Image 1 (tube, rainbow, N blue to C red):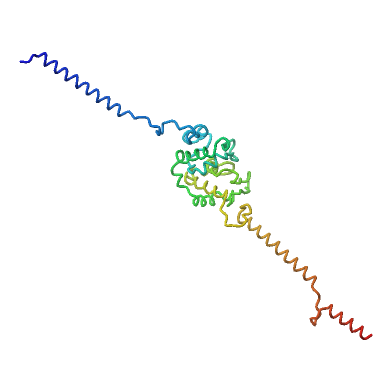
Image 2: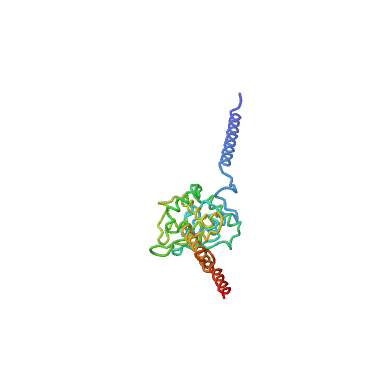
Amino acid sequence: MRPRGGHRHCLTFVAFAVALLVAALVAAAASAATPTPSPASPSAAPLPGSGAALFAQNCSGCHGARGEGGYGPPLAADAFPSLVAGMVARGGAMPGAGNLAMPPFRRQFSDAQIAAVASYVATSIADPAARAGNVNEGGDLYRLYCSGCHSATSRGGALSQGPNAPVLADFPAAMSIAATLYGPGNMPLFAPSVFDVRQQASVALYVQVLERPPSPGGNGLGWLGPVSEGFAALGGLLILLALTVWLAWGKSRQAPLLDPTGAHAGSHDTALSTGDASGD
């Protein structure tokens, strides 16, 4: 028979080996469950000079870390880099909105940095639904809700009360989004009750087109609109008509008179003078 002590030692060794194996398996599982930080992770700090870093340093104080708004307006509808770039470069103060103003960054940022911020806001901050905005829809909305005060060409207009509606070309097109949110001066609020983020973006895109409208040719006369340009054309026509009448009147006064027989009056007088001379 085998001694009992040897059997006991064998069982102890097996138990110890199994415990070591289980501990190794638990450690390996815990290591696999812990994710390795990735440089591309959203929680990672933005790279210096990137659009995210520039936004965090210069824009988030007013617009919020995620563009939710604060002192400045929310950026949910700023889904197009061209709109954002114009606002970043030019800045501006909204008439009738108190102290609401944004400084221009064109001297602080290079063109590449402005493009980086604009791309970051449009792709990572704005509501994805706003990216469906388009100029055609913006034109319909502008003519229906905005042209009555700002005119069909966005050159402003007189109001019955308060200051005149401003010329929209004097401001970045993206400021029209903020105007729909705040309703400065006599302007009513349009967002979000009337315009959703897609419609806000559409109106801003159309206002951007009105800043430099496509020309079919000829002189645009400052893009004052069809009525003003029609009056200018009428004025030119009246001037041409007056010039024509003046030229015709001058020629009629210089033309020789005709006697009833069709001969020139001057020739008839000459013939009479000749006959009198021969009779003498």
